[in-house]
Image 1: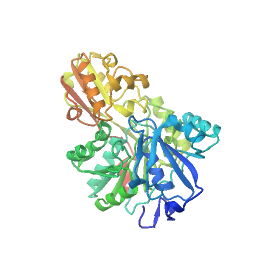
Image 2: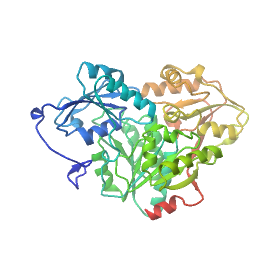
Image 3: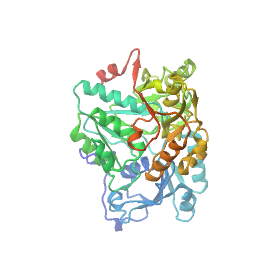
Image 4: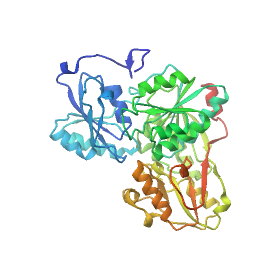
Length: 457
């Protein structure tokens, strides 16, 4: 809740006992364990007009067949709210009488969203896309939002650079990360990460560690969880400036005073093809064209043209993400297994990442295809995301998948492992062969740059 205005997300609170509320519109929220919960908290938790029958879950493994707990759902939902697979949507409408369906996840094609809308309206229910701004919470501290048009554009290194520049000005920074609540939702309502031990305490997945560890290394406290009103209240206690670290291509949960959106010239055209990435592009104060050091000129020009057409008033910055290898001499002429950031390859749909670029630059003799050696859920990842080629996504949603990732890595016949995840993967899995870690940071090119933008901010 935005406690300063007495409102949550801009909506006045009208409290009644749950037993007194009748004739509310039966509602389903389509989600993927993140934006769906936030939209509920802001728009529906206190609503006298809607009764949320269920959340549906997709994209992320092992998040369905749970319950959004009553501690988070509030007094209108004393038994909590079921979380069911998205495949149950038709029965929720046909058998449970759902009248209103709210789309609440990100990084999907516009065409996909409209197919969902057609499915819902064809069954006789309403289909809704909530407003980006009406689902934002206002902070009493300045907020810089770092978002993107796709997964894998380079938000992480951009957010780190923004944090570093603010720290250099003597500002105390807190980063609030887009949600990844894959465990006990009640326990994960508000999470604070200031040390590696906090990652273990909260049972973080590999995906979570990839986002949190680099901030911890910088001395930046990271917050995440489920209830982003409560999370903001805690972050405001410790920071002069709050950085919203967006996930996928989602819009900010907090009202930004400065909204930075990153576009990727390796995927020109995607900036206008995906939801809600195009929304971020249209809303941005600053558009950052990343990876200009590795993209071709045609791709750079295409994303520049899209930016000028959809948001001509935005400041445009160009940036590189140079690669740094711990020990490149180990790679030259060798048979190499490349491990890339998982979400970038899966729902980000990239066919390669920083690891492939680094291995080729260092003169790898051969990129070994890990697909014949994949086991368990890792094998299923390749079947679901068939565009992934001769590289391994660092998937790790839970202990079983981490174990299967480790087994897959150690079965691949190669000489050296190139690890391009944002974390030290050897802290999580045991790797039997020598490994080389790839790091990447943001470097703006030309003027204006992030220093200029933050000075004005």
